[in-house]
Length: 196
Image 1 (tube, helix red, strand yellow):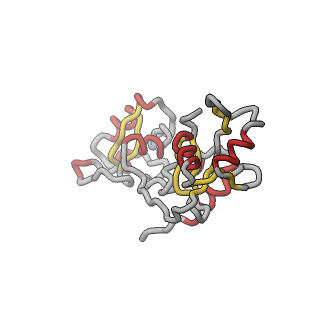
Image 2 (cartoon, helix red, strand yellow; image 1 turned 120 degrees about the vertical axis):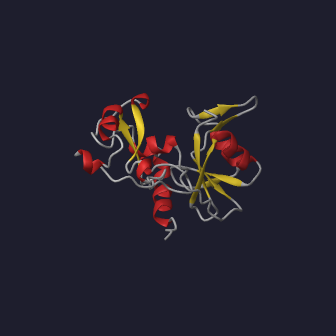
Image 3 (cartoon, one colour; image 1 turned 90 degrees about the horizontal axis):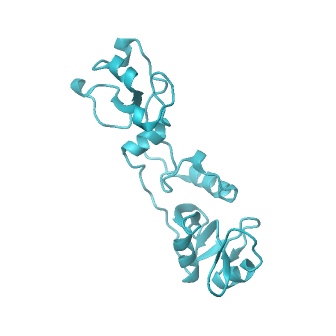
């Protein structure tokens, strides 16, 4: 439970981070943040949150002297900037973007049965970039070989591109399953600064 995720809002109530429960409660305890109630968005400092937590029947942590509900959202009391983090270019994020699906035949596979293919092969000047790497099953990768997809008669299901995740949260919009986060995550998605 201590490793559960808590949405962190800046002072303007814009989603900027996802923290674990331990970090979130530490911020609230130090007065650097307040807990946001998921039902009515009222805010609570540590003592008032501890007080209303005594009636909690689930989703709480018990200490030696009291129990405290696990917050879903906190709002920072001083910080008002945004964290801009690019989506990290990594093997894991290529698998996440392509959802363990061969981008040539469209079938889902276990990670162990997929390879990362260069759409434009390295031998032809292809680079390691978001728009040149895709997941491919072994048979599609062997069939494509060192050729371009159109030279082998196979087609890409979709053109590869940099993921459109919320940059400052580093998560996919469809990965959010906490109902109380929706208002803030959707707002964060539409307020993200576009880069040329």
